[in-house]
Amino acid sequence: MKKNIWKVGCFAAALAFAALLPNKHVAAESVILPGVSIGKVEVGGLTLDEAKKQVEESISGQTSVAVKLEIGDLKTVDTTVGDMGYGWKNNEVLNEAINLCKQGNIVKRYKDKKDMEVNKKIYNLEVGVDDEKIAAFVEDLKETYDDPAVNSVITDLNLGGECGYSESKAGKVIEQDKAIAEIKAYLGGDRSAGTLSITVVEDLPTITEEDLQGVKLTALGSFSTTFSASNKNRTQNLKNGVSKLDERVLQPGETLSVQNLMMPYNAANGWAPAGSYSGGEVVDTYGGGICQVSTTLYNCVLRAELEIVERYPHSMTVNYASISADAAVSGYAKDFKFKNNSKFPIYIDGKISGGTLSFTIYGVETRPKNRTIKFISETLTKTTPSIVYTVNSSKSASYRYTTSTGHTGYTGKLWKEVYVDGVLESREVVNTSTYYHSTTRVTVGAGADTSNRGGVTTQVNKLSTVTSAGTVTEEPTTEAPTTTEAPTTTQVPTTEAPTTTQAPTTEAPTTTQAPTTEAPTTTEAPTTTTEAPVETTTPPETTPIAEDGNDLTEISGEDFLQ
Image (cartoon, rainbow, N blue to C red; front, top):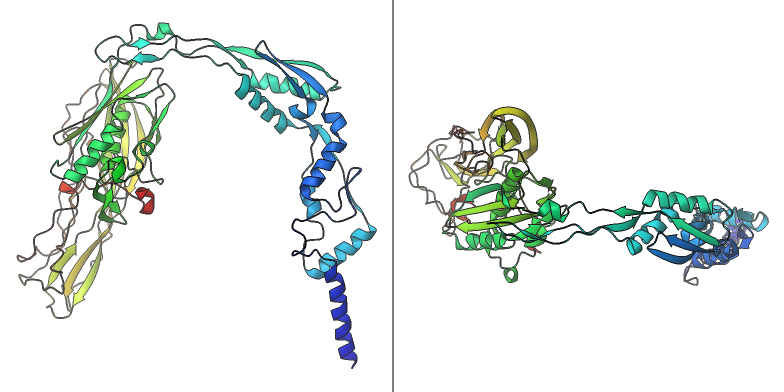
C-alpha cells in the first residue's frame, strides 16, 4: 500500500514540474523565461527579436547621435554613431538567455526554473566601440563611394603591328586603415553631434597610354599535341573545346577557368559522347577528350610563364603528355585555372589542323632574350597493374586468357629549368603527380599459377625533356594465355571483345623561347611480364572508345555530366 502511495506521489510531482516546462505544441517560438534582464531592460517573456529591439531602444539615445561624414571631396553623407560602430557590444547574451533552464534532464530543468523564481538573472549591458562594425562600415563606404583609377587597356589586338589602346584615368579612394582609425577615435571621444572627415587618397593607374605606345603582341608560349582525327566524336569535342578558348583576351590580373568556359557538358553546348576515364575504366561521356585541350593549354601557359592557379593530374596516365605535364578537368572536382600576372593583356590563339591541336599565347614580351626555359618530366616510381583471376575449372592449368588489360601507375615530377646564355641558372619543381594503377583481369584453368597479383611498385627515377617529339611514358602490361586452345564463350562473351588501354605516349613541344636540340629520351624501356605469350586464337581486340588511346578525359561521377 505504501509503495503504491509513493508511486502516486512521484507521478503527481512529475506532472507538476512537467507543467512548468514550455509546451512545444503551444509556443510557436521560444521565449526568454520570466525574471531575466539585460541591464535595466526586462526581457522575460520576449522572443529573441523582441528582446534585441527592446535593448537597442533603451540605448538609442546614445547610438542615434547624428554625424556628418565628409569623405574627402567625394561625398558628404549623414549617418549616426550607431551606424558607424558604436552600440550594444555583448548581444551574445541573448542566446544564453533564451537557453536558460533548457539544458539537462527534466529534473534539472525543473530545479533551474524553481531557482529562477527566487534568484533573478541579470546580464550586464555593454555599450561601446565595435571594431568589426567599424571595419564593415568602411568597407560599405568604399564599395559605394570609391572612384578607382582606370588603366589603359589594349582595345585593338593587332598581331601584325601596333595595338590600339584606351585612355587611363586617375581616381580617388578611401584610405581604409586611416579611415578606420579616424572613426574609432571619434567614437571613443565625446561622440557629440558634429562633422567627421575621413582620409581619401589619389589612386593612380598602373598601366598608362605611355606603357602601351608602340606595343606589339608577340608569342609568349606555344604548345601542340596530336590526336587521331578518325574518331569523329572526340575530334568534335576537341574542336568545341578549342573554340571556347580561341581569341579570348585576359586583362592583367584576370583568371581563366577552363571548366567555367566548357560546362555544361551536353549536346546543346556542342559536346558529343566520347571516351573518358571513370572509375579506372574508359566510358563514353559527353565532352570526352576535353582534357587534351586543357593539357595542351597548360603546357602553353607554362611556357608563357603565367601564374598557374589550379591544376590536377589525371587519375591515370594519358598518351598525349609526359608524366606531370597533364592537366585534368572533371566537373566541379578538377579545374585548370591560370592568371594573367603580367602587366599587359594576353591573347589566346587556339587551332586544330588535321590531327594536331595547338595553343599560342600572345602578349608583350618582357623577358630577356638571353633567357630560355626547359621542362623536364621525371618518373619516380612505377606500379604494375593489379591482377584479378577467374578460374575456369573446365580448362587445363596451362590455359590463360586476358579479358581486360589494366593500367600501370606512376608517380612523377615536372621540373622547370632556366638558362641564361645557355648556362643553367635555376631549377624548380613545377608539380608532383600521382597516377593510379588499374586492374588486369585474367581467366585461367584449374591449377594455374595465380601467385602474381601485380600491384608491384619499383623505383624508376628517369628524366625526359618535354619536347614536341614526345617520349614514351608507359607500356601496357600484357597478360597472355599459354595455350593455343581457343577460348570458349564462357570466358569471352561473343558480344564483347576484350579491350586494352594503349600505352600513353607523351607529346611535348619545345619552349617558344629557345627550342632545345636535345633529343627526347625514353622514360620507360619496354618490358614484358613473366606471363606466357598471347594465345594464337585470341579474339581481335576492339578499338578503344577514343581512337589511338586518346580517350583520356578525367570525369568524376555525375559532376562531369552537369
